[in-house]
Length: 214
Image (tube, rainbow, N blue to C red; front, side, top):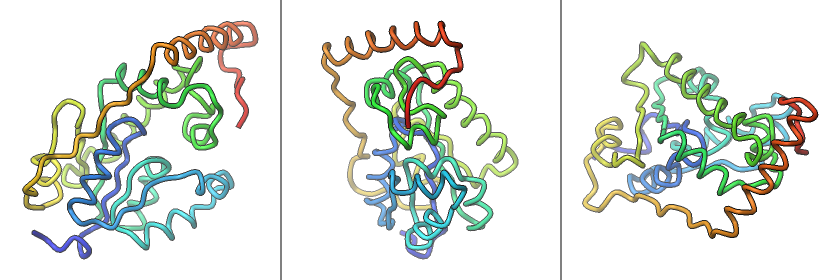
């Protein structure tokens, strides 16, 4: 197996709920020094200061979750020779998972990514942002197939795709597909009810109105 610490940096640039936890676990199994995402980055990023993510990137060699997907261009420029992994999944499954997971409580990271802080009632905004991100990544790397892996772990991809891209031997253990979230009927109902109220309010005040608060 190659020496992971000496390998190029690897950035997971798929949006949340595209099996990023699976990717994180796989990175750790392969021996990478991992850095996830987190709200701690948000205050600086709101002001256009990328120093915190560059400092974190300097200390580690594999990355996933927000805010890394937002800055693949800047990371590519700062760390030439890096690898990038765009995790994807069926977009309707993705949207349902995002709604179930993130709900309707405002979150500063979601505000940074999507422009609104929660998906319930703003499903169209979230879906369009997801689609735009994936389109832009594919366009950016269109002439660099060796630098980008597009992979759907939810559809059954695993060690073959990941290790083939990174140049690793396949570990002697099962690929760590993460368990899907479990959402109760009551939780789903509450999201539908709040979503209906927000959709109604958006129709009254204008479709693009940012009704949430950061």
